[in-house]
Length: 88
Image (tube, rainbow, N blue to C red; front, side, top):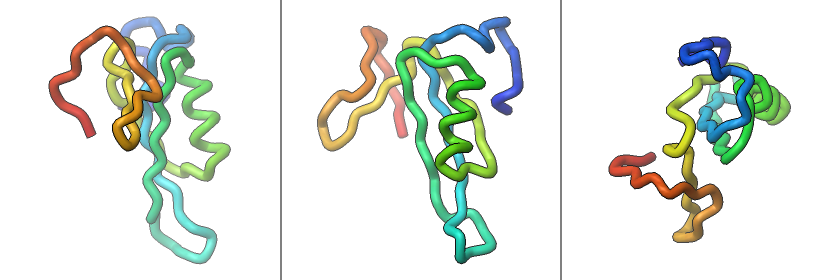
């Protein structure tokens, strides 16, 4: 979804958020970097601002709430009690 969508009237709520952003290196014309934003408590605008600060020219909002979780090299960085059967 677009980061501007207010699908459940919780756009400004500080809940779990998962966003992807596309950025391009300064020397390239196309988007070549994928940025991942995962937070246990952020509003949609906060998530979008963080990605923009890292150079994301395009963004997409994924699922949020308890499904916003992140594991990196076997270490849980953002967790939730909710079981998530599929993940990126």
